[in-house]
Image: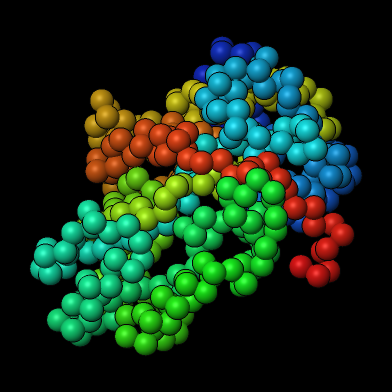
Length: 391
């Protein structure tokens, strides 16, 4: 980002008086991040705070290789606000071999699979989502739209979404295995052999046979353009609070959304999707933990890191409701600081809203996190080392 130094200076203007620590940003291109971090961590070169996840710079592998610092004592002592911001059951998701090695970046943890439906067509066909509780309940609407509009109603593929059917996928990268989230025996199953998968396949086939789903997977840009052109009526996704606004921004229509996943499930993969960790080689882990406390509890620090300097990279649209916008004449493409990585830096619930219609979404999302049902396997991490060639 061209204005990285300006942002770093602005951060230190806040951080140094607060905790007496100076921050140095060291961005790495996402395309080479995994390889660079693996080499750096293997070399033992000193580093402080790094991004880690199941899908890049592998959290499980880093723990197994001993390159991350245990945070069990640091968290309550140097980051009490962060430590107390999540239930202990949530922290369990980051615990490996009895220890916590990563700070969970708060965002949406469960996966509330559901539907987002064009509001104009709901009104036209006098259909309400109030009584919709499962995929099949949408079928009268889909039939009416297919006949009345002459379009393929649904943008999607298959209707297997493990959390919707009550399963914990255990490892998102191994698609066919998991366990029933409420199973106290922790029995691992092949999804393809379950009654739930059979039912999902039957519904999917019926929707295909009725012409309600596209016959082939569409490229993202093409499907988005088709939705904007009115060639779809509904999609299904993780319908988190505020997704009606995000869907409108993507597809151009007003949407009504409905979560169909009950109960919501907290699993390890969803909770540890993005983490920040302290390197075992860090010369000052206590200071690094204090920095992470600010990233997660201080809205000014978080938004400066994620959005840039007020008055330069963003301005208030509605300060009372914490709604920001780009300055006049500046766009997402022309901004000199717009990393677009809120989910990477810390507690996303500290982020200022970009759209007035999203006000309240963070509180609703946190409530969803805090009230979701913890999987019996919460905290379990697949050790891929002995099965890497098979996976």
